[in-house]
Image (tube, rainbow, N blue to C red; front, side, top):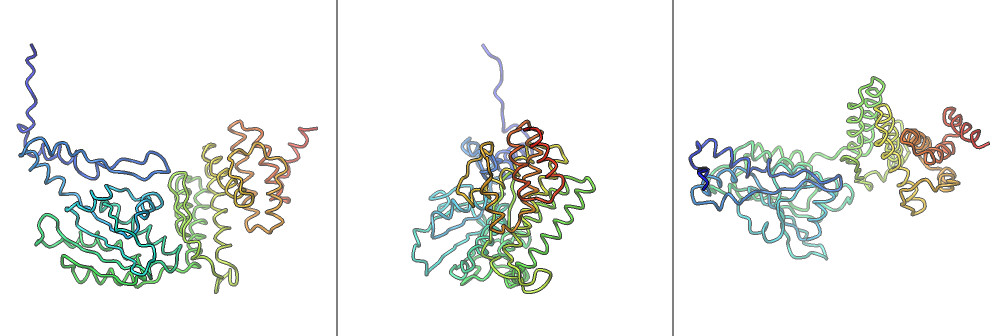
Amino acid sequence: MSTTMPFRFLDLPPEIRDQVYHELLSSDNARLPPYNDDCPASYKYDLAILLANKQIHHEAKKAFQDNVFVKITTPWEESIGHINSEGRVPIVTTGPAAENFPSYHLWIWIDAPGAPLRGTPTSMLICLEDLPLFTRMWHLSNLSHRSLNRHLQLKLTLKDPHLPDRKIPKDLQIRLLRPFGIVKDLDSFSIHGAKVLPSVEEALKEEQATPDPSAEECLERAFALKDAGNNALRAGHYTAALQLYTDAFAAIHITVSGRKRHIHADAYYMREFASGNYKGQRCDYIRLDIRFQLVANVIQTYLKMHNWEEARFWGKRSIILLRESLTGDNDDDLDNEKDWEWVRRSVYMGFQATAQMGKIFYRTAMASKELGHQKEFENMVRAAAVYLPGEGTVQAALRMLDKGRT
């Protein structure tokens, strides 16, 4: 017969019990990392402890109430999937569970009265920590669809869900409201519920009234960050170089997360430079050129780090995307390429970034060679030679291949 005594949780000191509740119920600990680069993070709260008994429920509930939740209601059900996948915003819950959840500090109500395809309002629940991700996604969507916000109405309702008459502290007001500073040019915007400090509201409205950086300014910043990355690369600071290249992508509204790149705001760059070194040139063409410069430099950085897999991945991804845009073929197998007709066609068409694409092919070839993909290496050297007919290193490599065939 066992003589083991049962563990008496309530005999632990209150501060130890509070620590246990925090470990189980805080959003920080409930956050699950993404399964892969295609998925955002998620949340899983271990709420079973709330059912143990009345005392534990009362004590643990306080720990759960330390979390700050935000409810979002939109007139389009499909927007939830867009927010989650494209915006990579982790979602706590959706549907009726979110609609009926009472313990939120902020309710975001989005409406589009003039939209012809409005559906039944749908809600989702997120954590305060992820609110900047949501507003950033919204900001990028407005840059991609320039008239979007002019048709949207936004109503924010603040409250203390646990003590309705209690004032919301200033630092929490700032965390709840300031992320909306980048949500500009709305049809209407209002704040309701708990009283907001004038200084917080004025700072928010001032930021909303500040125009976004122009396409020219975004490109200039991207070039500056790229140059700083090149300096770091030459100095052997490879991790710093990769971060600067990531920041340069972000400056032109391209988000990089692991192996994923998301290109936003294409419509924002559909214009000509009004002044400066690129006066009269198309912003979208210059953006395309710097995109390929950044990819070529990222590959070079991974080659310097002897990270052949990442170098090959970044190169092949850009090659396959370019081929798909020209031929519709999205097969990731490059071994079967023979005459590289689509490469020649892109040169004849006056493709904006031929030199950078040649570097991408050649540097990817070097990674493929290190990984033992000989046929892929040979194919990519031949393609690089089409883009870089006057580049000595590439042409020398091509002659070596031709010599090996004789």
